[in-house]
Amino acid sequence: MKRVIVDYEKLTSKVLNLLVEKFPDGYDYEDIISFNTNDGSYVKAVEVRTDDTIYLVKISSQLVKTMERYFLDEENNSLDIIDD
Image (cartoon, rainbow, N blue to C red; front, side, top):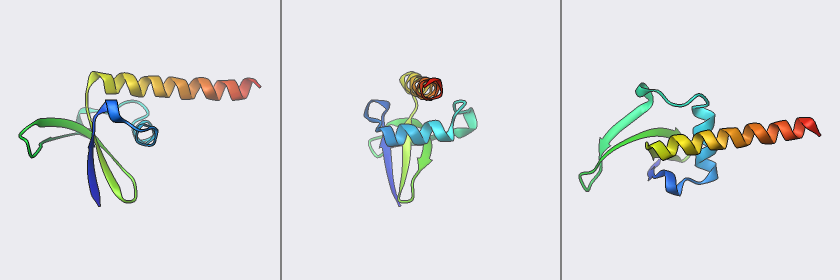
């Protein structure tokens, strides 16, 4: 299984969807994984998985905002469908 470290700026809709599915109410302290990369950087991330890949998504304030925006967009789209 391959591991991929992803920054919020490079989130694909697939990974963002996995994040929102796994953490619909946001992530907690116990969901955070901390590790050092090969270049010595310290990273905090949350993990989502597919059948063949583990995505470690770096935590930042922008990630939280992106997840919230995605969730709100999904809610609004659902409401539009119901209203039709």
